[in-house]
Length: 163
Image: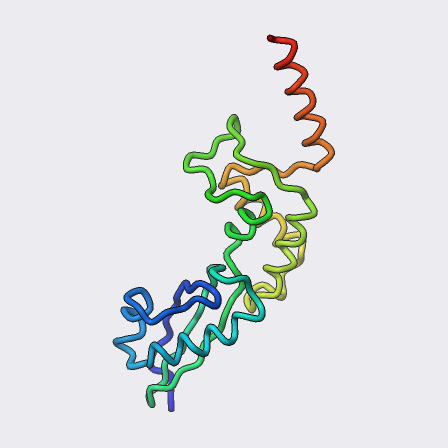
């Protein structure tokens, strides 16, 4: 019972259905798609919100059985959830900002990312810097909440004085 092949998938939490997206990856391996979807949904439903995208590494074995590892949601998804955006910037630049995120949220996202198998040994500060880099590439700046409120007041006052 050796591992034949490993496949990486992106599957929505608690909403996996046997269909073309999963079928094209699992069909050639001889893995039962319905069984995978059932087990995956049972395992992810109590942990994650429905339709949260998750990375899955499925290991198909020679006797057509399988096992899989579920990783945390992508960093970009966690950032979008924290900021409340549906989509990041298509062309981010320092002059246009699409949103702001608090350092506390960066810290929380870094703690979530640190629980992944490949990041447990990295310092939390390094992971937080990586999260900040991802946020910048999405057009999101890191700023304190108090600073954000002050800037909004200044912008409102300047726009009122221009009128």
